[in-house]
Amino acid sequence: MKCFVCNGEMKPYFVKKIGVKYLPGLDTFEYVRCEHCGLTVSKTLYEMSHEEWSEFSYNAHKDYFNGVLKYEVLDPKWLRRIGRIDFQAGLFAELLSLGVFQYGWNTMDYGAGDGKLANEINDRTGVPWLKKFDEYMEPSGEYYLTPEEVREGNFDFIVSSSVFEHLLGNRGEVEKIMGLLKPDGIMGLHTLICEEVPQDPEWYYLLPVPVHCTLWTNKAMQIVYQKNGFIGCSYNVEAQMWLFFRNFEAWKKLNEVKHQLHGTWIFSEDFVDYWKCKPYRTKNA
Ligand SMILES: [Zn+2]
Image (cartoon, rainbow, N blue to C red; front, top):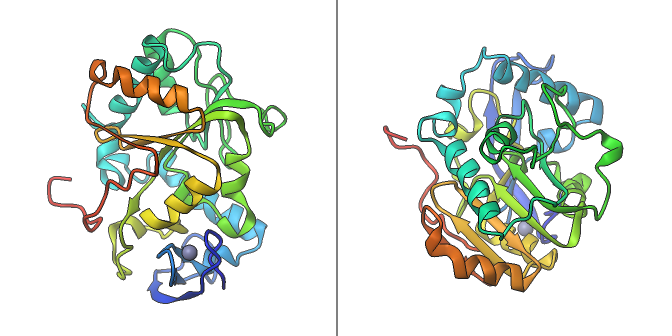
């Protein structure tokens, strides 16, 4: 298998075994790692048919959204007061009020799930600024875009929160999302990006069910960033949110107003490779 990011050679990295639950007969997951950029993918999920993938993904997330699996346990930083969702929603509301983001933009939360993030932002701004789209989940609530409305080159801003780890890179899904942006569109990205993916089948990120199929490294994301023509990057530490700009003026404007914004901001013309420590949770995480 070749790396979909850099075309490097993917070598076996580790194997994870689970009890059969989400798809009949599926209890072993193989992971392979790129020798060049370190990107690690689930070979098992990458090689599934579309039907198997959809069923697996649906079954695995159903329990998450219907409350059988608890947000508080799986992703404790997401909804906690004050948690990541508050920082992310607050960040977008501030960028709107300072004119870095515009009210008239065509926007989308890609992979919005049950729409929690968009609802939170829209509550703060008082207008349905962020529309929602989810290919796998049924719409829940208002302001969902239909697949027909999700057209190439049509969006000023796309946010993708906890989605990139679910993408099947070998089927062009990263390019598909990037291609939805206008030529000067801004990408907002939250996913786990680390210096090196742990060689560990018991890593928390693969629990309780190993649905995360694309495990990102700084080097792999830097290549995606450059390939897609981004020229300015900003990272907000508290929101764990990267913003990728193709419009240098817009990025400079954000840099100028950063002192009026909450939280810690890191700026770079190249991808901000912020996370260098091993991505394990501490007791208090
Ligand atoms: Zn690679």
